[in-house]
Length: 89
Image (cartoon, rainbow, N blue to C red; front, top):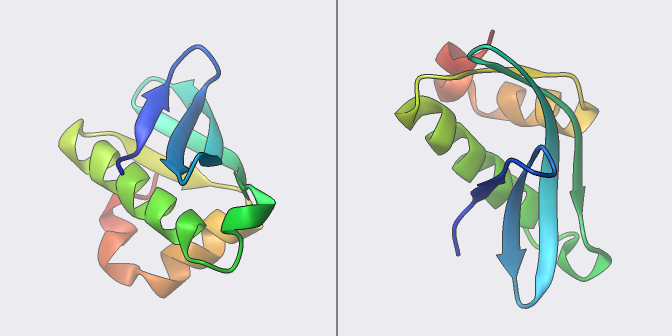
């Protein structure tokens, strides 16, 4: 299970057990603004959104992107993971 960048829909996606968690984005150069994170009802409370954010951060790090979280969940995730703060725009 890995996070993919669905460029057509401008969102990062994680599929688990046939269900989808995703983070929409707006890209401006090398900065991805994350205004919305959502997980299918069947995935909620099971850590899928956190795994999505882990994968999103790994993609950003590998491709030298920065993240600007505006979604409350994404903002809270970065607060809980200060080791990822070097990715913040």
